Length: 201
Image (cartoon, rainbow, N blue to C red; front, side, top):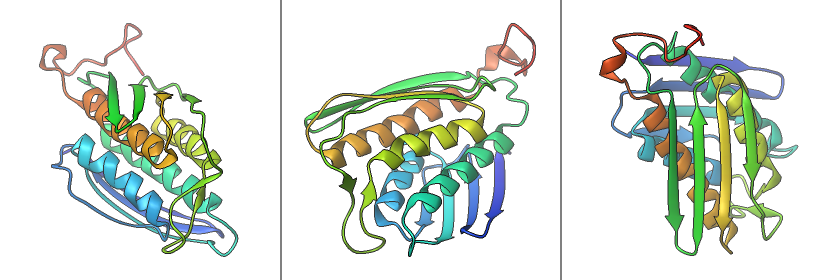
């Protein structure tokens, strides 16, 4: 069973993540940031992961610590659930259109953390004025970078074109879910081998 439960507690945040990689896309998410909840829901729904995320953060300061620590906890959950990563497809990618926007994400569960994020945003924030308020667009690159570190993954994310920042973020997170789904699948022909010429990830 490729499942994990992660708790991360600091002076700034308290995070709990429960992940089932081989799920059906069910999710229950409450971070105090409505737009972050929306994006995490896309990872679960389009990656077919069962995901629970509960977070309490210092939102009286701003959204930064909550977004960062949720990404770190989620990455840790993937890392723990995948274990030695035996039998994995390992790499996956996806293009996702969202109205006028086209997003792309490629993932390699290589064990080597790295993130490249190429997005030109139109405004300074996304998200509503209620349920946590707006989130600075700069935090989405930081989310992906933090996720890459603890998931021990190489993540490349790009918006090829688009106008609406909501659509840009949504296309990226849907693509992230699809790419992670592809990369975390089991390849029967590997017969439990580690997917690397090195023999270890």
